[in-house]
Image (cartoon, rainbow, N blue to C red; front, side, top):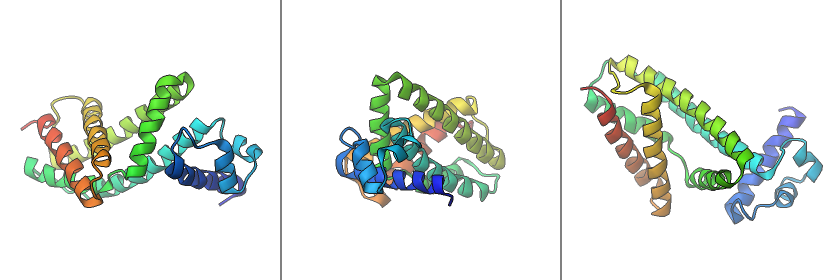
Amino acid sequence: MRGREATKARLLDAAAAVFAEVGLGSASVEAVCERAGFTRGAFYSNFASKEELFLELARRGAHDALAAVHARAAAVQGPFDLDDMDTLVRLLGAAGEDAFTVQLTAEITAQAMRDERLGAMLAEWNAGMTREIAQIVEQILISGGLRLRVPALEATRIILAVWSDVSERVVVERLGEAESTRVRADAVAGVVRLLVEV
C-alpha cells in the first residue's frame, strides 16, 4: 500500500475505534489524529472534514458488504420460483450490516439532515449504491426467470428501506448476529415476494 493510501487507511481505522468509543458527535479530529499517530495536517491532506472522514468510513463498510453480495449473486443459478427466491434472499442476507455500520450510518444521516454539504455527498453516494444494488437485483431476477412488478431501481429503493429499518431495529433490540441476519432476511424476503410477479 502506498504512503498516502496507508495514511488514509490508518486514519479510517482510528476513526472507527474513536467512533465506537464516543460516537460521531464527540469524535474529534484531534482524537482521530492522536489514535492514528498523525498530525492535523495529515488529516486535512486526506479529508476536508470530520464528516467526510466518517462518510468514507461508512462507504468502506458498505463496499465490503456489497462485495459479499456480488459474490453470492454470481453463484446463483436459475430458474427458480418464489420459494427459491426466499431462500436466495436469506442467503444474501448473510452479508448484513453489523451494529457499528448501522450506528455510523444513522449518525451520518442525522448530521446530513443539518449539513447541506454533507447531505449532498450522502445523497450522491446513496444514489450510486442504489443503482449498483439494482443491477444485482436485475442479475438475480434474469438468472431466475422472474420479473418485477415495478422497475428494478424502484424495487431496490423499497428493499433498501426495509433493510435499513430492520437493521436499525435489530441494533436497538440488541439481537445477536444470527438472529439479526434471520430477522433482516425474513423481512427482505417478504417484501421481495410482494414485488415479484407470480
